[in-house]
Image (cartoon, helix red, strand yellow):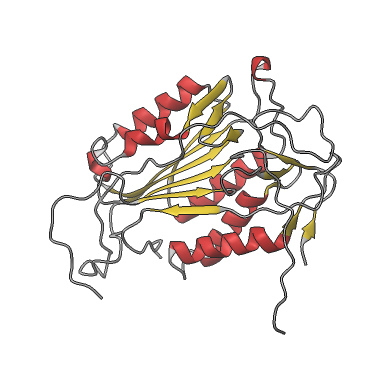
Length: 295
């Protein structure tokens, strides 16, 4: 049974909706699709000989960068993202418990977001097993917002590609993005239901390899956030990580995140035409091995 929240659901859209009837808001300008990745090497702790499992027996699990944009400059005409602080706190606890070194920032401008990404990419990650970035903000297709305007998502992630961030080559780089990717609404659909390969020896790998982009919604769609409980995606992501991180491989966990968001949430909004809507996250993986959190 879908969970129908109180009339406090909203979307991480480009701008606050000043008007809404039964027709969708104006389409927002579109930019390049998200596709930045960077390769890194890996194996696994006790299973270091397994070519299909990332190595996790490093001194550190790695850095988790969390950027939480709530308040936006008046010039952007975007509303405050009420409820995002719940997401930020839950993400901080979840990734701290997993063993990550948290770097947390509130309300960064575009330049500050670029600077944070660039600076971290220049650090020495040779003693780290992975890198995680959680972005909580307004967005549109191909872009995410600083407090003063939009930036192409690829301009933030490009610093971590294999040809730029050498110490993360072959290691997983995970990006979790809570933001709208367009202005479409998902009405949902009714469903009727009944009650090993030789290890690679080459020293060269694609610069886009070993990235995972977990978007809160499919391309072109709004992403829902409850003003009291936080976003649907971050609620599901953190709950599934907390429950399954010691049992399942990451892509299995992300499939459960998709299922949780798809089945357990349905919008309840005071805006005409915005109630009874659904959402499905979108997981884009360029990972080359299985990712298991260390126990």
